[in-house]
Length: 496
Image 1: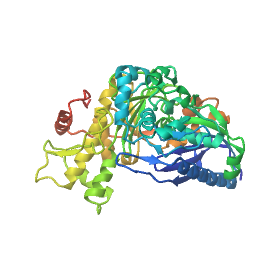
Image 2 (image 1 turned 90 degrees about the vertical axis):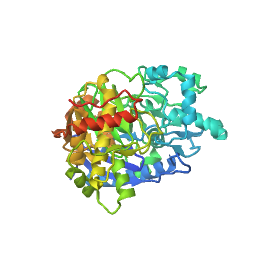
Image 3 (image 1 turned 30 degrees about the horizontal axis):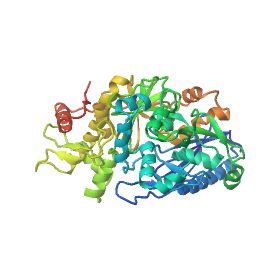
Image 4 (image 1 turned 30 degrees about the vertical axis):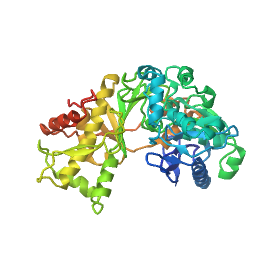
């Protein structure tokens, strides 16, 4: 039996790579995953070896090609997605100089300070949409110059993770705006490298690759890669998008429909709000990136969400299941005397932008048990998202959030989030990921749809409304305690 043609989407994640094959109806007809190690050579450092990405990706592509041959399905194009902000340092021959620092690497505090001395924060935000952030790629380049001058002397090119893989597959160095806007040196309105920012830091623009549209073909599969994987020679490779932008494409989130955003309850908590115009928060408390659809999006990130529950289970009660913890939390009534949890276990991104914040339970008494701690933790993550949304609200038109991530599968937790945000929250019928979005970005190049807008409209997911849970007066009591401890943010979570 012969299947209709498909497009491939590859997402180069932090824990592993995932490849999917989608038909024109958005159905997954084959998939493959591979993992690779995370390196932590020093406290605060996170790195990976680009060679590990390459080996795992080629192996996953080889497996997917085998599945498609059995099915009789022909791949017409391959789209890319991946973890943002990482730095792959290459020499003039295109060889990797050292392991790649990742998005959550924290070694660049001194370089962030130098960026903001060279380029005033307000000017940097107006140009790039963001303040300087330790995890971004730009301070990593300065760190290499400061700390490993011999390696910097060899430096000829810097690529983002997925763009390095694109170079491996095609021999072409290129990037696209959704990922490039997370470097820290892309002029958002021009969608080009900001030479004034780079000149202020004494960095040449030729270190960075050409910026093309997210749905553009950057090159075709090299003959040796095709032979190694079993994929067609000259298979078009599409630039794709950063992981959050690609996941947004898969969910149908578009600047043409700014009323629909997403909330992800994964290891971190993420709010995604599409924008038609580049409208940054003047203080840079949330990120503004280019979207893969040609528009823009705000991104608010709270670093400990489902990861906080994982921490509680692993460190405090490893013998207890997640299901038990969630059930115990739901059995605790909402009362003003309940404890409050501050979820800053790894510092905080939005809206505090402070890596030194730390978590805490407040208001503990002898009357409180494990269920109270669990409920406070769930509420604390919801309040953190609401705190971030307080910054985003004046800048966006979002009225409905599609909920994704492992935490969103729990009705109680998601209900708390819906109540804290004060907006409609819906659970999609299925939860496509960044790899799906990368495959959708490849569909116009494959000829399956005339353009990206047509593909997104045809494949738009349907959501089921989630009932919001609000506890009054306990809810307001918690909000007051939550915001009072760290009054530096002007964001205040509110109910409707």
